[in-house]
Length: 134
Image (tube, helix red, strand yellow):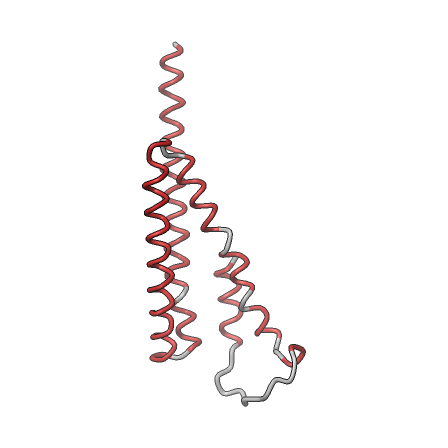
């Protein structure tokens, strides 16, 4: 949904539009409110992935995995913000937002891979328990 929203908003952004002073929130164009909506769709992903990964790990691995998740999310947030800032300066805001599609797509692919791994593991456990019962 966030990718669709981003792809719907970006072509409508106009670099050549005249710069005007905004006196209130009522003066902000509709696109100015739609772009932050992407965060509403992305925000639930982090806790959902944490919960899914941790619920499929043995209890003794929860602490190390939580540490890894926190470290890599902090690195990703810090480096991601830095990279986006550099991109804004080098290629402009609109093109920089198109580059943001890459991590979104990578996140979707990683969720699908995790889902496939979990499904295979649960099927193998079901087969093993069925064989043990027989």
